[in-house]
Structure formats: structure tokens, C-alpha cells
Length: 77
Image (cartoon, rainbow, N blue to C red):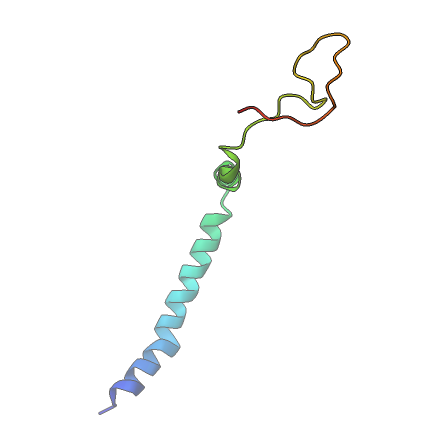
């Protein structure tokens, strides 16, 4: 009779290798399936959801003629 180590080693070298390869292939196909791009784009932008949007590119939020504001990028609070 085989010892436990040899039995588990033979199982890992044959069926478990096949099962893990199939699992890896399934995960790759699931991640790159058609239609999953919006989900991945949303996950990539998740850290920026609480980021305040800039008021204006020019930096002046007053929109008055003759305003002497320095052109800085201001953010909303």
C-alpha cells in the first residue's frame, strides 16, 4: 500500500494540476469577457469618487471684468 505522501503527490501532479489550470483559464475568460469593460472602468475610478471637481481652469470664480485674481486652480469645498 502507498503511503499518504505518495498518494497525495500523485493526485497533485495529475488531477489537481488539471483542475487549477481550468480554474485559471476560467478566471481569465471571465475577467476579459465582452461587456465587462464598464465594470472594470468603474472599479479603476473608484478612488476618485470623493475628489472635488475644479471650479475653473483659469482659476477665477468671480467672472467679473477687471478681476485681478491670480490664475490658480481652485477646488470646491
